[in-house]
Length: 118
Length: 113
Image 1: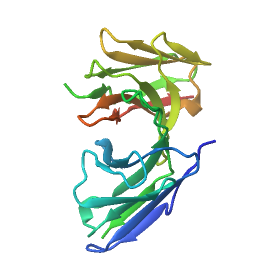
Image 2 (image 1 turned 90 degrees about the vertical axis):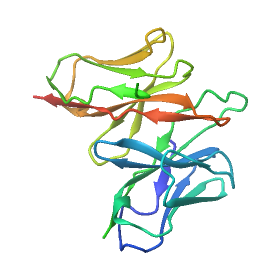
Image 3 (image 1 turned 30 degrees about the horizontal axis):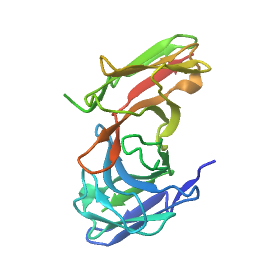
């Protein structure tokens, strides 16, 4: 079974703190993603990565950065946490089929980190 | 038109009922389609992929209509444990060399005894 783990289930931070959210997958997936999920807004893509050291902005990258130094690990960084970043953060991973750029395999999610910024 | 649109529900049905969800998508070039299930305060989990010819997995049937750009999920003989939010997921090409999966906001199902 695919396993995606996230470093914390619940996290409380203060405004202005630097926050690191870690995600690890054990299936040798090329793609990794960070989403946030808020009531009424659904899942929104923050950043994604197709390979080690590669990253691309999603729909809402402002206030976030990412790091992918190893294939299995994808980190989300909140440079200076703000109260509007209080949310559920979900990491996901998937295979990427070579040469078929329009087809994407299903994504597998970690359990999520519920972040509260006070 | 929103990229992926679903009726938010809630759908309240009795045990044993048959319930159907529809989802429309805007990008006619989309190639991959999925239904995910999300329980309250949990992560989304893949329920089933949706293939052009339609596919069935036990009580669940998924259909794709490319001409009308919608996918559907049919649940037969509903169980209490089917209560969850069902997310429609479609891939979209977003200008770069890779597409992304776009998640609908979900349809909430509540199955009552």
